[in-house]
Length: 389
Ligand code: ATP
Ligand code: MG
Image (cartoon, rainbow, N blue to C red; front, top):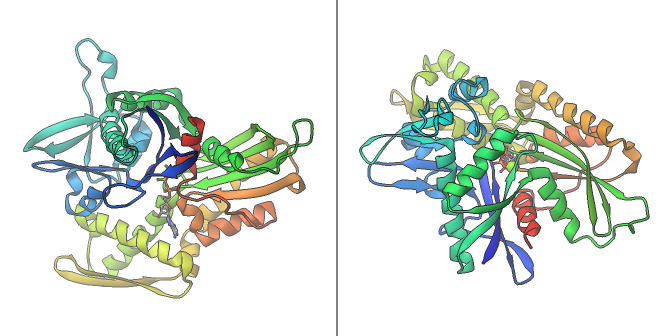
């Protein structure tokens, strides 16, 4: 039986397997290696991953996404209420079974599915996602998959961890280990390197920095031949690509209100469309510093809208977010008790590390160029798979 590594991201998930001595990431039926963390419910069927992604705009009320931070929380939890404000689908407090009333008040998603109302716990939704990933892995390996290693953010609490394990169980998976994102990245880095000092020598110190869609995580690690020690970890659980998108969304909502008299937030589909367009715009700004147009036909009330943005203006809108990048860096360096000059490399991973200002902020702090030895998107999944090799 094969053991598989799953990186369950806030936005993007990856599957890695051990195959003929190496680690490979696996593609789905669309030949995509990324499985979006989206589950969409229709009147006849359910879609997961790439098949569900477009439904965020076309069927926003019944498409569950951005749900990872709901794990292990009650509906009343302030974190849940903050998330809820930005979600187009309904969250509800679940009622426990008669014999398991500890489930009372946990958060769930309310959707219309197969012509009637359903309430799914976050564990059930993640289980649907994991089931899809399990099937993708099985199709690639031509083997049954039961055992796995799943990544989680290093700041996940016990109840969040338990909730992810419950999801794995519902998906028929035996999760051998939950692995911190940054530890998985370090393991992936270490396994192929030959030039580490002997055990009795001074270790090579590498910092790993990961910014995803929802969170920012950093770790300091010491490597000797065959040995990896995590010296310290730090994080900002609320700093990721989506926070930068939100600034753009707010900016264009205000602009469209004054320019076209449109109240974008009053229409769920329009808001979701704007979020998607702003994310595209933000990605384009990573490789282009000139003006980038934002054009949407029939955006609202049959009106076409246009706008533009450039990198300098974007950095102005996000100046405080860029500043916040430094906070976990200070903490991780202090806890690791190493001097800047003793660091061998600063490795960056995660999709949002492609934002030039974020990368520059990290470079400035460590007073060196950052390294991109690892595959920024797949490093976490690969590390999880390595743990089972
Ligand atoms: P998390 O780690 O928070 O759970 P995740 O693992 O799903 O989230 P990643 O897949 O690492 O997140 O990164 C997704 C983020 O990276 C998104 O915000 C996406 O917009 C951003 N991103 C991807 N490519 C680029 C790019 N070229 N420029 C800017 N941002 C990018
Ligand atoms: Mg991630």
